[in-house]
Length: 165
Image 1 (cartoon, helix red, strand yellow):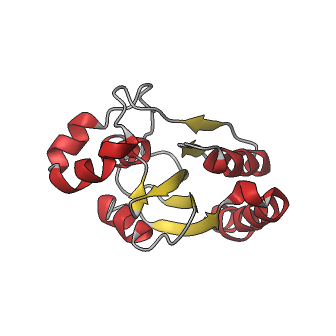
Image 2 (cartoon, rainbow, N blue to C red; image 1 turned 135 degrees about the vertical axis):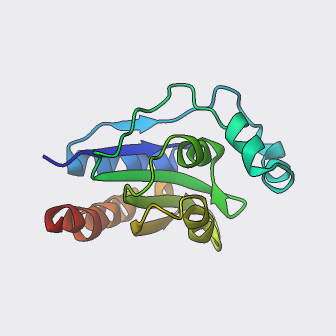
């Protein structure tokens, strides 16, 4: 049995909707992340631009520290796109809790153009291969289409990767 974990953060429910479909398809339990100290949405862009990497690591501590070790086969991460990057909860996971070399698959929800999102993710975890990614524009606006598409993504990309390994 492959060791897979699914972590996500959802602000308006779009990413939660996707995470639940992925969890159902893989038979796993999704884990919604929260920070010990919330960063208000209005302060997020300033936090990204004006804070050093070390300060970000110190501030982005999760409420319930996930236990991830090198034996995991895949970590699936889901986030809304905020200012062309992931939500602070996902940044905290990537910067503070993800061991090097564990492959990740990334799904994200957005309301517009997510340019730069994957580049930011890859820059934060350069030693973790991103084996697959998929973006969804406003999935709650068309749940049938988004649900079908996320199931297809899991089957084609993520499940295929796990069976090949």
